[in-house]
Length: 289
Image 1 (cartoon, rainbow, N blue to C red):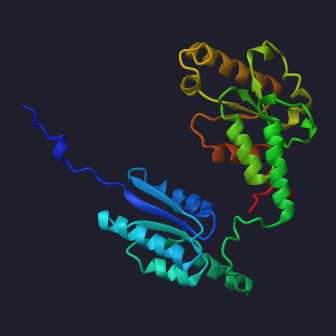
Image 2 (tube, rainbow, N blue to C red; image 1 turned 90 degrees about the horizontal axis):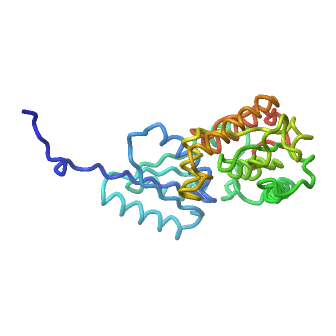
Image 3 (tube, one colour; image 1 turned 90 degrees about the vertical axis):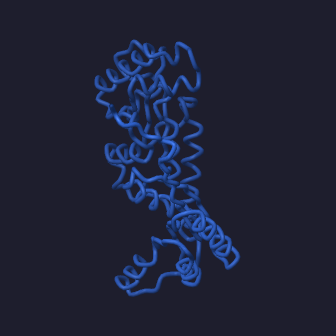
């Protein structure tokens, strides 16, 4: 006879508290911290982002939150991007595990450059270079105007035109490339009206050299569409299978590079697009700070 176990008696492991603490927006701390945490898929984390920690009052609030988490379980893990040495020291003295994402690297850079790093907080995601700022804003406006094939105006200026069936990830990828790289990106939805066809749809055909296709699996597409329009022809597995097959056939016939969004993040898809379209080597299209 097989032994039985009382699963209710097995203690559940509480998620480990993780804080992303920054003197700016927290984007850098979140990005680097999450990249490190991703290497431990079996662990559970309770994430907290605390931006603009640039004063004694702000760090006191962080210290209290850390102490509360420490009292409830294991010592919290803190990923920090703080430039003020005094604030960093106070955080290091708290009941936590601090992973300083800047200090050691800044010291190495100071040595290499023979210069002292600026101590002003919030430089990473401030307004910064006005030319870069306005380029980013223009890119966002361009992306909004040209989302889902809404406009043909100035398509010749587009750095990339993303082509894909509905709900394959066109808009998130477009906005990421615009915000992060300042690229002029348009996207066009492939619909039933675009088939049958031997070539690209009329709007994007003159710009084939800048087109990039997205696809996914029929099952994944059906699941995503079902959240928007449940129990509809639009979300049916048969319709999704048809649209994916037609789209991929189109990409191959017209020699457009494409990738599947089924298991990739927006960041990964953007990286592939940059590489495939030879955009990484253009100085004015590198990541904006």
